[in-house]
Image (tube, rainbow, N blue to C red; front, side, top):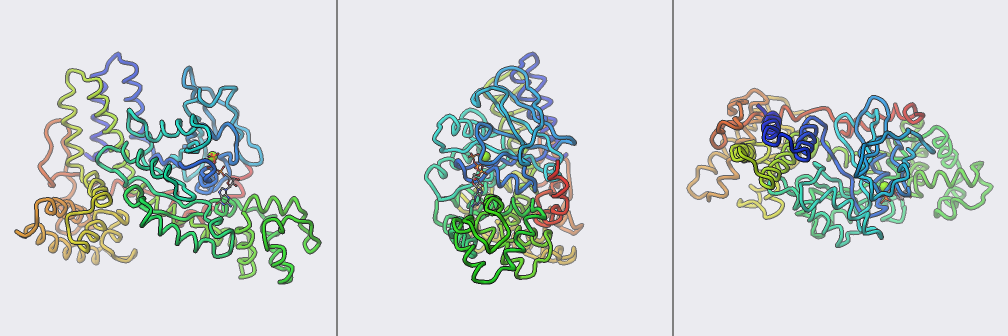
Length: 540
Ligand SMILES: Nc1nc2c(ncn2[C@@H]2O[C@H](COP(=O)(O)OP(=O)(O)OP(=O)(O)O)[C@@H](O)[C@H]2O)c(=O)[nH]1
Ligand SMILES: [Mg+2]
């Protein structure tokens, strides 16, 4: 049994204890659903950080309302459905279906006359391939003028009395502000113990504005991101800081033929005319007779791409992008979106089961301790056993330890340990620092070498107990890689025993890595492939 199966069994067992308790059964239904759903990734950050724009960029469609009024103050879930649907969940009373209407492409989310504070969430079902492997959650801007709005996001992402409903978080920041750090600390503290900080990534958003829209803006943004990552107090709170120009990415992934034609016209101008027009955003929309594009068309281009995007698209057409699809691909490459989606895929989606199980076990434990029932004790013991023996959870715990306090190993060995337990991703090549195309024989050879080395360290009388425990986790990760490629060293999948007493240390975890590798809708390559379908879906 995998930890996922174990968690499903536990949730069922707990149901038996809360017969007749509607509130508890509601929580348990929700947990059961969560275990069977894709990973929940929340997009959070200060007001107007570009959250909804980035969500659209990840989806490759302009669905989420941006620059919006009331609806931007409600937590909104985007999950896969065969046909579009919008369901509003009031805090009190039955959920209501709302009509699916689009205005200028984006969904018109009216709140059925309810004030935002009376709404728990809006659920959007959408036939997007990306949503098959991840649920995206758009959250209201925190640190906003309205303390209520902030409070709603905080209550959802970092509640005081329950674990977060999100499995992972993409946190957008523009300039590192103390409220950003406070928020990330609160989110970290919700994920008690096991996976602190391994489920948060920061995005330096609206990255094009950091260099004032100059063509090298993303380079400047990259430097700032690196500084925040190293010195900004973020290191222990987020796995990294990735600069992304979300508006450019959204525009690129929904690029229209008319827009490509406009960029071609700009690219064909005389150098002096072109440079004159592109001097600044103000200048770009002033009356001009050097182009056939009217003022409104230029204003629209600016709203869709920003001055950075307009400059970049023009120069990419000059450099040889010959059609809209090629231009779109190149713009996406420059936006940083692929870095982010690749990161989400490697770090979050590849650990989807682990992150979900961790969240579900946290909630179960709270329920059992907060409202104890006869029969709670063996179930609590079962939870502890999964937490202690499920290897993927132990990996998360050690990764977290590495970020927060450091590992009890010399620096070079600690870095290798972090990599082997999945700090750079859970694929065998990433764990072993091999090239992506490495074949099974190379993987087996490297695993054998590493196993010798880590077993020797673990057995050395000079190795302290705390370091030996880290070694054991590293060795177990290597054994699981070995079992994936059919090599010696792994004892292969074995059953986890949930309620009837678990296996001893290290020996009996299921090989869940295989179970966790699944096709992602957010992987870097998919972004460009998906572009082909953009014009069609965009008509919806
Ligand atoms: N230049 C630039 N503008 C951006 C970028 N991302 C978003 N914007 C603009 O910033 C404004 C706010 O964007 P939204 O996506 O609505 O931001 P949000 O964080 O969802 O806002 P709230 O939900 O109201 O907190 C819009 O005018 C966007 O066009 C970006 O990468 N670059
Ligand atoms: Mg928004």
